[in-house]
Image (cartoon, rainbow, N blue to C red; front, side, top):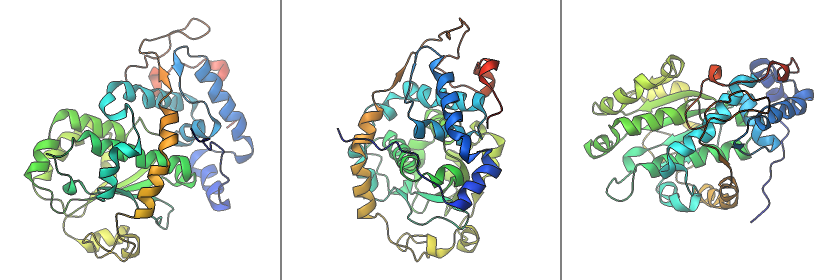
Length: 320
């Protein structure tokens, strides 16, 4: 297995300033914050998650260095892997290559003026009779995980999701309009992945899509609901947020950017095979356990909120 690069990559000066203002990150002292967070995790028996500095930093940034919220997110990151083994078991790019080469899921090459990377999702290209909906979720997880691992600026700036629904028909709606899929999609969008989703743009959505969205919407927090923008068939509205030069030239959105799928990007994802194999080794106990002081720690088998996560007051300080 190839050596995995978990080095913390240096941010641009403007991004360092943004991290300080928006995420409470003190650039000079974040190593001590990482060590503090690692110790909190180690004090919870039954947790055998990844403890690499760069990996832990994702959770701290995603929760603005609030240790209790970061711990809840870390627990959820592993809890969802137990809840949905069909999505997370043996999660590797090679097993969902068909999703990438058909251009259903892509990370576009250029960021917005605010630094947000753009995740493109085109579910209408999916053929439900050829492979399951879980492959859609697996591909999205891989793309976001790759972003967090290789483009650390995105941990600060976050990403936006562009859902292009041209061609979305009843065969797609019937497969996706069930509560189980809705729950999975909602949980992946919030509280289980250390990424800041700044906006979700829906374009060319047909009337039948309301059937799918109607199941997902009640499961989203109000803040996430407010970040979903419906453009209908108005490219003028979409271009207000995502100008043409950011959009692929071959997906019917009057974009002038490189076409999708990108052979180079697909090849890059396949090169991440070793990373995803490495991450498969980490497990957590499905039982609620106790920390070293005998206190009950959160159950790893269920999704947590910050209030569910128990951290010793002595472990919390003002270092961040």
